[in-house]
Length: 144
Image (cartoon, rainbow, N blue to C red):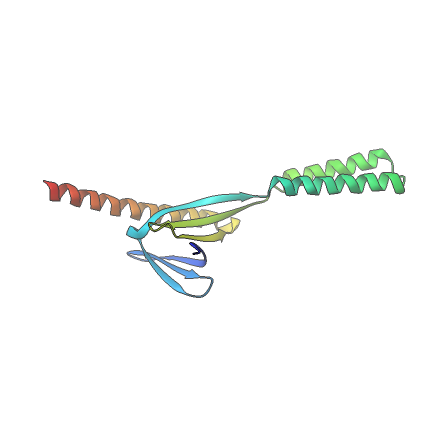
C-alpha cells in the first residue's frame, strides 16, 4: 500500500486544505485530520559531488598526459571547478503533509516561492493549533 502521494497544488479553505493531486484528483483534508506539515531541504548528494569532482580531475589528468597542457592551466581549471561547486550549492525544497492515518503528501516547492510556502505552512499550523486548543477546552469544560 502506497502511503505517499504527490500533489501539484495546495489551497487553503475555511475548514481544511484542498489538494490537487498529480492524477488531477481533488482531495479535501480537514485541519483536524492533519498531523504535521513541514518543509524539508533537499541537497545534492555527496556522492554526486564527488563523482563530478573525480570526472573533472580525470579530465585534467587526461589533458596533462595527452595534450601536454601545462600544470598551471590544470590547477587553474580545478580551482574554477571548485569555485563553481561552492557557488552552485544546489538546494530544493519539499513541502510535506502527514495525516493522522500516516498518509504522506509531498510537493516540490520552488526556491522562488519558498517564502510563500513558509507563510502557508505557518497559516496551517496556526489553524491546527486552534483546533487542538478548542478540543482541549471542550474536554476541560466537559470534565468540570
